[in-house]
Length: 338
Image (cartoon, rainbow, N blue to C red; front, side, top):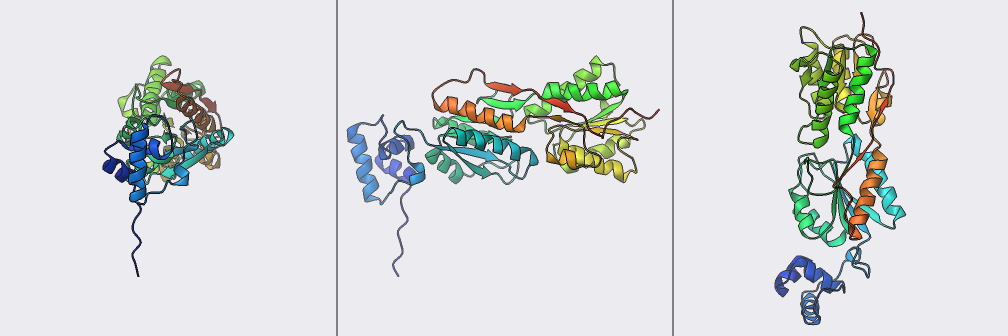
């Protein structure tokens, strides 16, 4: 039986023609910016190599794709509402969102995925990119990139997030108003700007309200359930343990609640607990979790609208868009026992 010859790729066409992949793509998709002689040469080479244009990669007459690539760690509860916000805004604008799920937070997109997105997508939205080299590669191909949260204090791409600093201050103020003076803090993954800002907000609020500034009250975490569990155990082992714990996100608050119950402590009678994000699990915990709500779907919509502006050739008014957060009081916080 004859073996079917593998179709040539765009990169192979570009290499044989001695042009960039972008030039080859423009020629094959009948876009401007390519001389008639070069276009004819590329089309001839593509025909000889058996290349056919992927219908998903076809561009509109103005050179724009109707596909938006979304890079996310989908098994992280934080991302689901954000993706819904992106998808809804994309659909309203006549676009489709193509979502690629990274296997874990430290993964980069495989080169094949990055190459595919460069060919078929009009732009990329990356949610919580812990590693950004692949985004810089994509952006170098003149593909607009927007991030949701970021590693950088001064991001190289437009970035959308919730107000982590102010949200942390709201959390500490709520506990201080209840009468707590000794508040433990479980930090997030400090590679992300949001984690650094939540820590800064906690520290500034502790100073503002004259609360205990014991450095042992701050324990490193990484936004994961296990680190929340381990960090809470360290806080409970202190000679003077806190009367309340502020976890940098709801997932680590869930881990902290397990450590409290393992110790035989009741929430909030023996110790108060507050989280950050207001993902679905916050309301399902027992008792329901007091938390700082991020407008996750609005963040997704804002990121999509920012990307559309970039696709249209408009500069973002700022490289950072910060949306307000709010305190959601439930049953996991109360005045400390006297």
